[in-house]
Image (cartoon, rainbow, N blue to C red; front, top):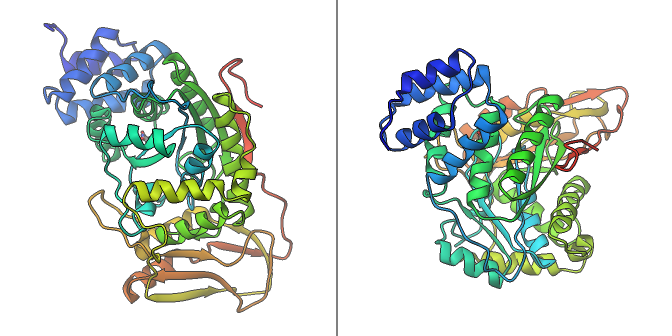
Length: 433
Ligand code: URA
């Protein structure tokens, strides 16, 4: 394509608050993909978008250009309906590990193409890699085959899925330009649309431990993603769920796999079960499957699918999970009630204990993490253990311990209940419930 456009023209247009033409958006993203627009120019454009935004047309074109930068999976030949879930990320968020096999056991195909964790929220692939032998990298043919045979795949999103997003996200991460609703929405949705799912439920986390602390902005992000999905033919629904305290008791890779197995065995923490079932019901409804997912958790059908999913990717579902060698406890300084548990501090502690990474090439510890021994509202006495810390050496243990100072707020009264499921954002009316 010959063009008179230049990167500077595109940056200046957006900097001055004007809309970009479809031609300009397509050109700039293609040229960036070819290395003809420099990182510093793309960073300047991203910053202009942080301030000026993108309107609906610009956002659709931007998302299309990111999808077209790579391959699209074609899952239309599967005998099962496809439906996926995406979470914006939270502390102790192990829902994908349970949800994918659960929904598959109910008759759908769940193609969960995931990324790795960065910062204080853990990545689903890191968690599953704590199962001996399990591998994250699958070819498109392997994904297709596993979806047909087992119904659930959790694997790495290949390099060829929306590659311009991959480059742009890495650039945004180091230029203070992640926090833009159109940039986040197009980044997430380009990958989900390219993955080929026909339906999608978004779990948009709100609160101290989430990417979006503010409910109003979380709702706007949810709406933007729902509309983008629908405009690309993907039936899309979002739930806003609370992320002030960690989900469940365990934060850390193997610890979260163990807790997920508890839920798949019909037990586990109530909050993990509640969010999982709520998302599962919406996923099944979107693809017209009238099945009760709770029965599949209680009678072992979801667990059986989990075991097949792990084995299909080389994992040994019976192998013992890694356990860290060094342990310590944080004790209550006074009598009282647990008023709140701070998800962010607990996520940072797990990260410093070795469960997370600061750079994408860093290794993670399978066994490290935090176990919350108390829940919100519970009475405690001075000296009672609040948290168990696990790490592979004393140095990590000390760093994790420092991050937990003040992570549990103790008060004279237990405080009110904290609802988990805040609202649902659907396409039809664009309204919330
Ligand atoms: N996750 C993504 O994939 N992209 C973003 O921009 C933010 C979170």
